[in-house]
Image (cartoon, rainbow, N blue to C red; front, side, top):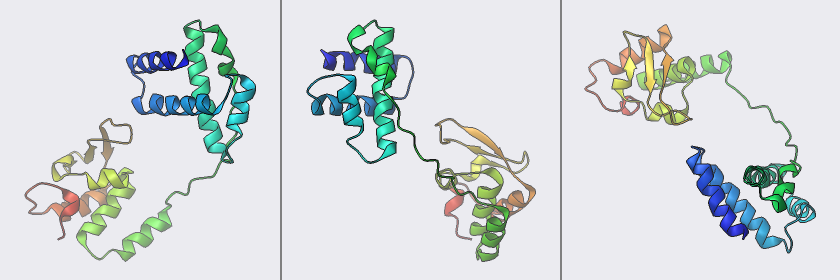
Length: 188
């Protein structure tokens, strides 16, 4: 019965426009829970959550059970409503190191090519991610308007990032006489 519900949960999730990967991971975790537990109860769920040492994994598993529980609640499936109240593990917060101005200046001192200078300037000025920089084409840079078009960002949506004057200057030098194609592969 639960397997049939999981497929309906997947379909409803996708129909509502939510991320396919997320629901697939949730269903994978729920199936692991069902395979490892003789009964589908809160006690069994808590035991399953504690079967890993990782608070991150415990939290993700709990989120999967809660998401399915919320769906059960919306669909009036009373026997699984307890999943809505599965406790979530608290993850330790580790501050993410970010680049500061001294890092940026040190990187600029270390560059040896025009391409490297343009890359550092674009990363710093536009807040580009490495993948966004490597996918950047010469046509994505508007030096007159002072911006870069990131065709596919972290969210999968395009975005526009402003260019600083120093980034514009570095990119202008890099693209001088450039016929087109990928701006990051030019080895001038």
